[in-house]
Image (cartoon, rainbow, N blue to C red; front, side, top):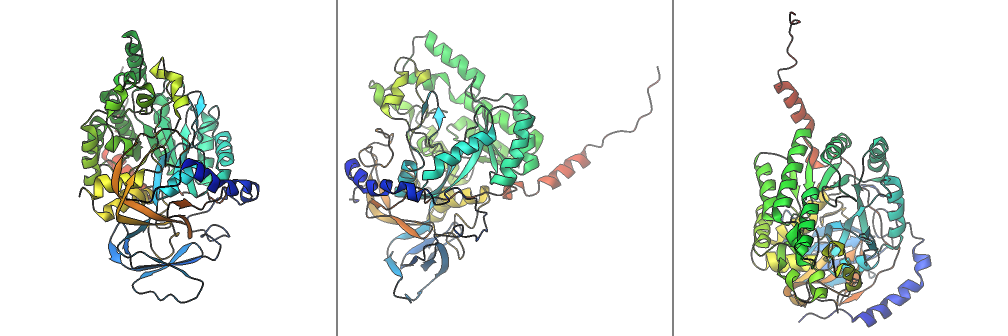
Amino acid sequence: MATPAPAPSLRLLLLLPLLTVAGAAVSHPAHEFCAVGGDAAGCGGGGDGTRILIKGGTVVNAHRAEEADVYIEDGVVVAVRSNIPVGADNVRVIDATGKYVMPGGIDPHTHLEMEFMGTVTIDDFFSGHAAALAGGTTMHIDFVIPVNGNLTAGLESYKHKAAKAAMDYGFHMAITKWNDEVAREMEVMVKEHGINSFKFFMAYKGSLMVTDDLLLQGLQKCKSLGALAMVHAENGDAVAEGQQRMIDLGITGPEGHALSRPPILEGEATARAIRLAKFINTPLYVVHVMSIDAMDEIAKAKREGQRVIGEPVVSGLVLDDSWLWDPDFTIASKYVMSPPIREAGHGKALQAALSSGILQLVGTDHCTFNSTQKAFGSDDFRKIPNGVNGLEERMHIIWDSMVETGKISVTDYVRVTSTECAKIFNIFPRKGAILEGSDADIIILNPERSFVMGAHTHHSRSNTNVYEGRKGKGMVEITISRGRVVWEDGVLNITPGSGRYVMMPPFGYVFDGIQRSDAAYRASLRAPVQRGKASA
């Protein structure tokens, strides 16, 4: 059996010494903006002179697995080869015999300390990072929500929230309204602040939702900036109608959430977003693909050569909606998220799509609320804050459900949990790889060790866990973040304020050839046709 994580009370005792020095720790430049190739002080690695030699393990990158040692110095991978000598006395040697040495996970989809539905997600940039590092994730990309539509104000707010960060992170930016000022701010976000992706909500009518005309303008602006357009694909108008239908039928519990927004509404919005992106000729990233309906639309577009990225999330891959009918509201409500967790069958289809490359990488949509917050909707499912956990569980669940079952290889595991994200958001090979010069974000996974998940052991501040009691095989025993061992033997060693913001440049590989295809389109028009004036 796996060594259990410290009990909540013990974890608090472990963290108290760290929190007492938080004032000093936060003075570290937690949000200094580091370019991908940057070697400025504090940007290239740990910067503390730590030297680590990982010996005897199987080093796994997305392109191959090999028996090799890994030498780390000052937060950077210096060498990857067989039989590296120990050398200096002040090198820590870690024996990884029989284990996998892999790039730390990168979660492309999180919501830490987000204001939403009248409350704030329970995990912030410290507790969320504690959970992530304990689960083998060493970087995540969080969504900045504008303040009253203002992007700059939103970014400043999130920079303040991230002052307590304990690992590397980046930002996406949500677009919640459209005008000339928003378009101008988008350019500033890309060119000055290293944000290369913007999310448009096709759902949440009356709050975050944008209409098709605004989405079209946003897609065009993203294309011009080399920024990736992302969509939450649900038909917001139809969802509002479905919600009212459930209320009229007297269905007010958590099951009404799933019934009010069926897969067809996710499929319709996904198809619409794909077609609008094709009209503009810009890449599209569909977040949290939860249904066969949406997956089929992505598969069709990819067969036709369109650049569409599909992101399933862990909950959609391994859970089903039966929990929403549980007679205990506390249990049922913790599974409420949007798009909803679907009925049995969708998850298996999404797993198959992930293994075949139709879907490309796995996120979590980690957006946690405790049972008290979920109870806001005890009499009306529309008021239940939407969101589930996953930051700590993702790496273990994907290994157990996909690698242990033979659905994907160990190299594919690295691809879907780390490398593909780094490539899409243009930070590879600094992230997402164990190569000479890469950041030393590394995990050591023991494939023979078992785990049990639950709220009594996790590091999230939530008192519930949608994977409660889940058992599996394959456990992250050591997490190294920028050359520092931060998780070992079930104990975290992290400091608030030690995290670092990572800038992500525009025009990633998904934009390759876009200008040529635009030129080909213009050449194919055979227009304008020269005509004489028509006679009266």
